Length: 303
Ligand SMILES: O=C(O)c1cc(C(=O)O)oc(=O)c1
Image (cartoon, rainbow, N blue to C red; front, side):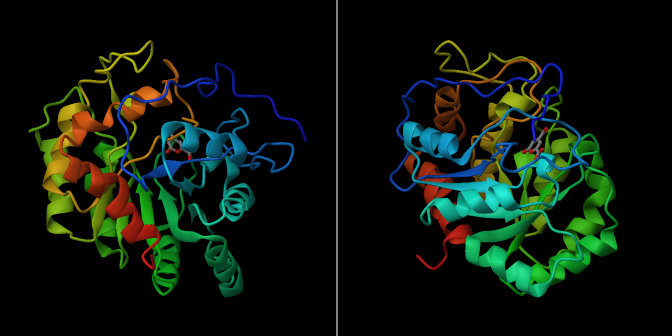
C-alpha cells in the first residue's frame, strides 16, 4: 500500500548534529514514535494525518547518534490501535526499547500478555481533538483497571485548557499516570499564572502523576528554533519545564518526540533538542534522574 503525506507535512531532520551536551550513560529517550513504514505497517483508516515513513532502523540510528542507550516508543495516533509497527520495533531492539500501546476495550487478556512480552508497559489515552475521535471514559477506565493488574501505567495527552474538565477522570485513574508534553501549556501565559498552577497542583496533590518535559519545539511561541547550531533554543519554554523538573525531580521523563508529527513551522535538529536538556535540568543529579533513574524505574524496574 502506498500513502500520500498530509499536505505541508514536515519530514524529520535528516542529519542532526552530534549534541554538545553528553547525556549520562544509560540515558533513555522516553518519548518517540515509529511511522510505518506504510508499505509494511499501513497507517490506520481512522487516522487524522498521514506522515512520512520513520522506521525502527532510523529511530535506532538516531538513538545512537544522540548518545542514548534506550527508547520508549509511544504508539502514534496515525496507527490507531494497530500496534504492529511499535511492537515490531520493540521486539527488534534487543531489549533496548519499551512500548506504550493504544488498545480498545475489545482486546483480550492473551493479546495484552503478548504486548507485555514484546515490551509494552503502558497504554496511551489521547484527548487532543485534532488527533483522535472521542472514546467514552467508562471504556478507558475499564482498560486502566485491566492494565493496572499487569503493572502498566497510563500515558495521557491533553491540552492545558481541557485539564479542568478532565480532572476528575485523571485523578480517579488507579495507575501511575504520565502526562505527555507537560499537558501542553500555553507558554505565552505566565509560568506563575492560574493555568500552569493547575497543572502543578495536579502533580503536587497526586503523587502517581508524572510528566514528560518534552516538546519545546511544539510549545514555543517565540523560539528561537533549534536549528543552525542554536544553543539557547525555545527560551520561552525553559521556565515551564525547569519548574516541573525542579519541583518533581523523581517524576519527570524526557524524550525527543522524534519524528515530530504535525509540526507546522519548522523541523528541529534533534541534536540541538538534546542541548536543550541542561537548560531545564541544570545539575548532573537532575539530569541523571530525568534521563536514567526515572525512566528505568518505570520501564525497566527489574534491572
Ligand atoms: O501534537 C501532536 O500532533 C502529537 C501527535 C502524536 C501522535 O499522533 O501520536 O503524538 C505526539 O506526541 C504529539
